Amino acid sequence: TTVLGIETSCDDTGCAVVDSSGKILGEALNSQQQIHLNHGGIIPPIARDLHQQHIEHIVEDALRLADIQLSDVDAIATTVKPGLPLSLLVGMNYGKHLSCKSGKPLIPVHHMEAHALTIRMVQKVDFPFLVLLISGGHCLLAVAQAVDKFLLLGQSLDDAPGEAFDKVTRRLKLRNLPEFRALSGGAAIELGATKSLDAQAFKFPAVMTHYRDCNFSFSGLKNSLRRRILQQEKLHGVEGDEVIPDVFNLCASFQMAITHHLCQRLQRGMEFVALQDLLPPHNKTLVVSGGVACNGFIKRALGIVCQEMGYSLAVPPPHLCTDNGIMIAWNGIERLRVHAGVTHDLDSVDIVSKCPLGEDWTKAVAEAN
Ligand code: ATP
Ligand code: FE
Image 1: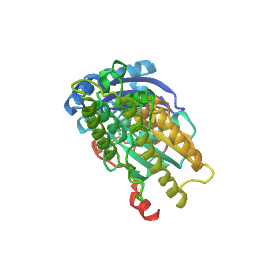
Image 2 (image 1 turned 90 degrees about the vertical axis):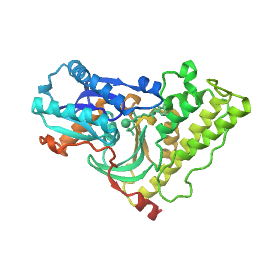
Image 3 (image 1 turned 90 degrees about the horizontal axis):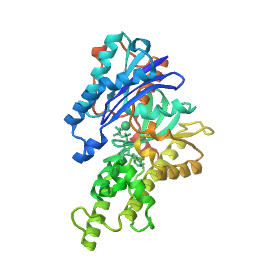
Image 4 (image 1 turned 45 degrees about the vertical axis):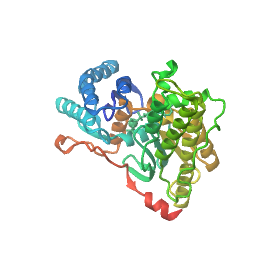
């Protein structure tokens, strides 16, 4: 079985052909990151135009690299939720066009479900498992019970961690340093932190530690860092394009604070999972994915929590953690296997810009703990 997957929910135009053994037959990706960096953020109509310019040749490239014809694939999977409406529309419409042209069924995909299931392409991870998705637009902790059945234990009440890294990187003017110019926000903070001599130089307030749920919050840490930057700029008389002298210590302290919060909330979630018997006690896995799962420091810290709590940690390789067409094609394979959401009725498929993953258990967590 082979599926062609299309991803355009945000700023990456991706396409891939994947088979049921998890083999990537062909892949193509166009990232708009460098263009949006010049604008200080994603401008939706610009993202749409770039998707439209690239979608056709990205699909052609993926098929050519896979050395197959569109008529050879078994289905077309395309992201329809959640994401930027203008971006989602390009991928959905192109997916419909391909489905119509080839007569193959369409599989509408939830972008976060795809992030959550990617690991099963590269490693044997059976349902149920716990999954932490940390990315540019989301932070969520869920129990994956089946391909299309998730229990949402916690999510961010404000910013996503990747978003916080992106904003803070801009505010720190990190990209004025040549080495950092082409990096995403999270990668820039991670690199900056490795250059720090004192990761304890700045203290950040504990976040939500007295909350009984396992939701997340990142805007408080972000604002706290903003105040520190202002203080430092004043103190050292830093102006214009100059970078503050303590910038690397700030990166390390901030990365530490974010990591600490993630670990604390995760542990709460794990306690709830144990209380409710949501996972088999002797076979517990935590899957971590989304762009922020590329971060080595965060991965190591989550690994320690897993060890303490009796979980094994599973993280896809970095290129499968960020957005790509591969995870969408794989989601198609997973859904085709269980006949979930596979359709020929193209009119019934539409985009949804905001769409939580799974059943909302966030209140149940607060009540039980
Ligand atoms: P979502 O999946 O929620 O819709 P998205 O698709 O925009 O969001 P991804 O492509 O999954 O997000 O991830 C992008 C995010 O990952 C960016 O915010 C980026 O800063 C972050 N990121 C990338 N590399 C690292 C790293 N090494 N450390 C921390 N964060 C990172
Ligand atoms: Fe994503």
